[in-house]
Amino acid sequence: METTENNFYTLSPNELLSLNLLLTILFANGLNSNQLNILGNFICAVGQNILSIQTIIDGLPDENAVYLFNQTTCDAKIIATSTNQELLTELQKEVLALKAKLLQIEKELPFKYT
Image 1 (cartoon, rainbow, N blue to C red):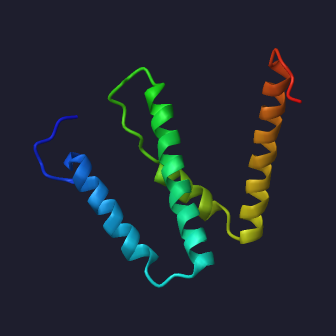
Image 2: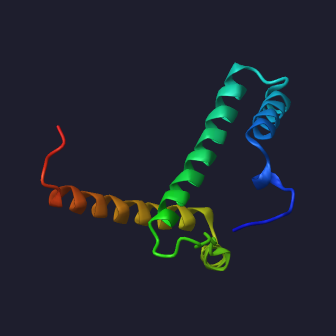
């Protein structure tokens, strides 16, 4: 995707590094050790999730694919779940389903974790 606009994605490495340093100083100013730890880990997690999405997109047959979050589906699920307890129960079901899938995948592996 080529663009002639001047935006974040067209910054040079030096400009990105300078912007990174400036934002780091702005975000970290006035925080204590625990707050710095929480913020740093949160930002790292956001970055890691973005890289995970990028890896998934790289595996798609269309190299120009763009990741679009299906907000409508998520909104419908939240509206359908009227209480926090119902939402928690639904999330627990999803976690259990994912655990079951992981166990099945582990059983199919040709080697065992020790």
